[in-house]
Image (cartoon, rainbow, N blue to C red; front, side, top):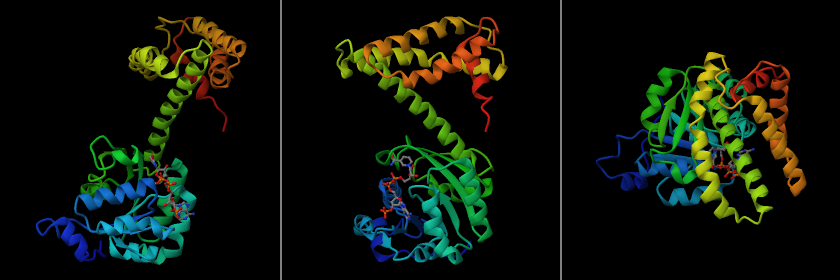
Length: 311
Ligand SMILES: NC(=O)c1ccc[n+]([C@@H]2O[C@H](COP(=O)([O-])OP(=O)(O)OC[C@H]3O[C@@H](n4cnc5c(N)ncnc54)[C@H](OP(=O)(O)O)[C@@H]3O)[C@@H](O)[C@H]2O)c1
């Protein structure tokens, strides 16, 4: 790969003589909350860092820390062979990269923008057609975590490319490589976010219901809900084992019993003036599985209904 440029004097000053020259130049395109955090972590670790953002004002704070503020995307691509892209969505990725497509050749584009697996594959193919290597990434962290080991970042795409840029990616947090299909990072990212939103939905419904009994949200959450959910988390590995085995019959908590519990939640919520909408989807899936009369099963069996969703 060609195209690495010498670092600016300000970065040389920031990084110190012993560090400058050991760190490869990196460009960061997109300086929203996350992109700015990524660029900040690279500066902190002494990488000569070039930044570009659609609204140029967002580059100022990073420039004051030693980043080079590119005036065009093409300039950002030319200054570093490793280029991180972190904008709002894949449409924005196209908006940013397409006008500078002739400068993509020889770069490694690491796209850390959230999107679907198919969007990642399409972007990977498009970038590849322009002579660039591509990795897709999913950031499982919030901006203040970036640069620390608790910031998990998922990657997929060529293993060789990942191995080559991992020393840079390791500055952002803990890297986890998932495989050659560029869509994998996005798939796992969205799967983990699904778990998170399911938890948030459960939290919101539980709290709204408890509030009808005059509970304060903080007291209810810290003294009852969090300990209860922590206890329930320990059930997940066993449910996962049943799913891998395709055998859901080891049922300490029969789904038919759980269906009645869900009906009670929905009826009680309506009676208390709380929308049951977050729970009715689960209620419907459980009812459909119970209607198949498979005998005693655990709630893991509901995955059979989920998998039958027609596209
Ligand atoms: N923040 C988080 O907690 C978090 C966590 C994990 C993953 N992520 C992911 O990181 C990505 C960026 O998130 P963020 O929090 O940084 O979002 P943000 O603060 O809203 O920033 C959005 C960025 O996208 C740019 N942008 C939007 N549309 C554009 C377009 N059409 N052309 C060029 N640039 C465009 C914005 O440029 P302007 O400044 O010019 O508007 C800005 O740089 C998203 O995919 C998000 O899902 C974020």
